[in-house]
Image 1 (cartoon, rainbow, N blue to C red):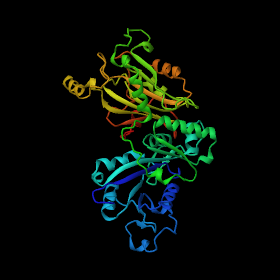
Image 2: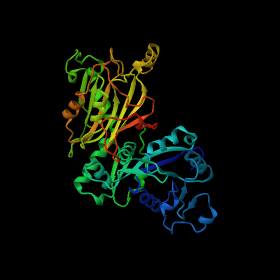
Image 3: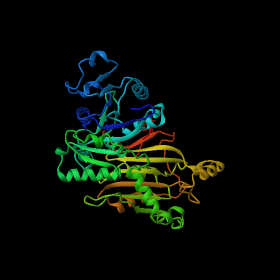
Image 4: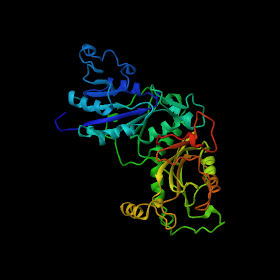
Length: 436
């Protein structure tokens, strides 16, 4: 590596048991003439082939670093990640860095460290790789009965498994469908189709025992501007429905008129390969009227199994100044307070914000207040979903009790979790201060 050149980084993610360790061993064993540094959370879990470990390394190197006879380095994370990677680049010479993300985190936030911190001067992100247990994914999203419904890390951190799996796929440039031998051809095709809908444009490979081409793993795959599936569907829908978005194509709402006809858009934004074989589609539900808080919680906390992923914004009656975001992945669903709507801010702040964000979807009467949800799934009854939500639309300003919804920015409440019985109405005490 010449002075001044940046080192490419591949971030490896995947839930516990998906096969990250097996893939890492495969990578180290088949490194060829590359000098690869691998940064892992637990050196003992990697079990590097003893023939690769240099005889002197276990005593001479120390500091959690094991040198391999083929020139690679295996390092255990002992400091914060930023400190570790900067020190590694300063003290050792290698061609490529592979960082193992925690089993309960997605690769995206890890990759951002190499863009926004002092590590950016030494490294350049080459790719985000997510290893998926094909059997677990099929059971979690295909109506099966997975052995695990939560993901738990060694420090006791717990999060819904469905939420983790979706977010790890959504951030990936390369998705490795591992344990391909444990699913049928039909199940594998359905999993692959769902993955391609969640992350359009990502490279997807199928394998057993983590046997992936090393050149592909380490290639320059990263596209920081590539949208995840739900955002791609939203943008595609926006491009095709400008009349509804700017107000020229909207129906005016009279008091007592069916809310289902009021200022709305119910459009399909099929993702690439959406209906090629297995019917993975997406559609956008957009309304310019607030939802009854209890009714919204009942519907969005109990979506049909056909919905793999849903995400977007909520306008909730009784808390009309708060912009809520909704995130669903399989059996888990959450609502979070994102902060105030622009329309609820002082007029001078509105004007400033709108000048700086001319793309903002703005309505003459309601400003940016809206419910805008993207649904991705297989065999979804779009009309039934839209109708269920429409039944709970209210007039702007209608009286409602939204006390179960958090108001502090960043706080969230669970509408559904796989580890407990689903509730039709969230309670304020269930809110947490973590974002999603």
